[in-house]
Length: 102
Image (cartoon, rainbow, N blue to C red; front, side, top):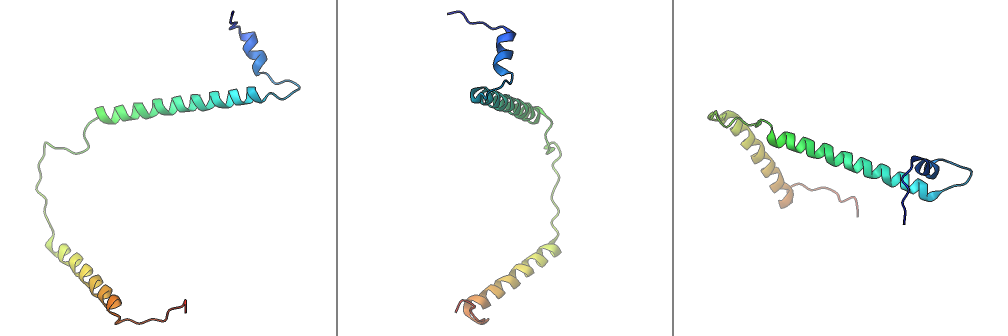
């Protein structure tokens, strides 16, 4: 079986004529999707390798001690304690409200 790879044969199969050719349209659609998939995989691989081989975001050479602001921590704890007290009031039934579904 002889396979002809001439450009005239390819152009003849792809060009539009008087009748519809769904196989040609599907071939073009699948070729475009395959080309898009190949380009996406290539771009993603390129960026992944750039990130892996690139410089580190965190500088591990400098070991800096963390300074904790105790005043801010106390404010945050106070906020959570207030929320816990409000939750307890809702759960214990101290707050009452009308049920709109009844």
